[in-house]
Image 1 (tube, rainbow, N blue to C red):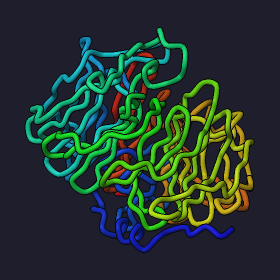
Image 2 (image 1 turned 180 degrees about the horizontal axis):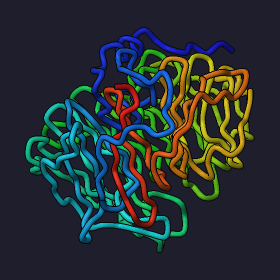
Image 3 (image 1 turned 180 degrees about the vertical axis):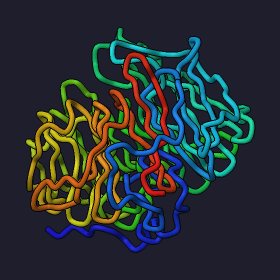
Amino acid sequence: MKIVLATAAALLALAAAPAADWPQWRGPTRTGIVPPNAPVPTNLSAMPKVVWRLNIGGGFSSPVVANGQLAYLDARDGQETAHLLDAATGRELWRTNYDEEFGDEWGLGPRSTPIMDGDRLYVQSCRGEFRCLNLTNGVTLWRTNFAGFGIQFMGSKLLEGTANRRGNNGSGVVDGDRIFVPVGSTNGASIVAFDKRTGHVLWKAGNDEAAYSSLMVATLAGLRQVVMLTADAVLGAEVQTGRILWRVPVKTMARRHAVTPVIVGDNVIVSSFTAGMICLRISREGDGCKAQQAWANKDLRVNLSTPVVMGDFLFAQGPMKQYVCADVRTGRLLWSQAGLATTYSATIGFGQTLLVLTDFGELRLVAADSRKYRELGRAQVCGETWGHPAYADGRLYVREGLTGNWKLSCLELAP
């Protein structure tokens, strides 16, 4: 079956995205792709220029950049804290605390990526505090807490791998005047839609617990919908009403789904270590949708690293320390390369090239080649990291540190 790889709307969105912006999880279109009008590196120096470097608090949350400003979240002095910086210099403009900190044996601090949207910054804590902040001064404009939707945060007392155990990692998504949040309540609030300006609840839907995956919004089979990979399933909900349009169980023992759904035309690709990778084709059925399996590859056990799709091909950190390339139309593995990372790597795509940041802090420039792994350069840019970097205006913003020695750096890659 042929998969449509990019809609005209998606291409227009990429072309319209400001060159300097990486305002949310995985960039302007949440695909890990740099907009085509942005400056990009043609090679990778063994020692990229460090523009600035800061000592920060703990956390795995990714930085975001828009309009020359950078926002990041960390844990310090017992609180999860939001910071706004001048992206060019690293100078702090303001900071504000928004919840009590959370940590476990994997590390300390926030894990959900904030969203910069116009004059607002949306932040989410591990414990389920969600706030809309004034981007000018950090003042809270509205707030909610997941406890109000019937959720009790258990931390490590909970044995299953849901967000109630390891923290609310999944990032919400803005679409028009709405913001969708992965609350994960089994009392009819897997997803909650808020008016992004006022915080008014527009709708709530679903009875699945949240795992660690972030939300996506897409037009599938002609219907605009928000897509969520929950602890037990993947589903699509109509953006206007919250009506569940389709739902497919994805059952795993640990229930720790972390990879963000990848949207390719009318297809949704999800993966986990237990289930492998699954591609669902969404089509119209009456006034709703149906989801049919297009392909599955149980050996493509992508666990933590959301894939990047370039043309007909998918690139990601796969199982057993292997970096992999697969045919997005069939799920067939085309090649694998050992030794890029231990557990996790983050991939950013541009043109016909990939930037891959490994969990031991090595940055690699790799050709987006379906025939074989071709490395174009590498540099040691930081220490251990599980954070996804941000790329804006030729600069890479990298977070490092797992259990200590946390830093945030700005590296110049394309002057």
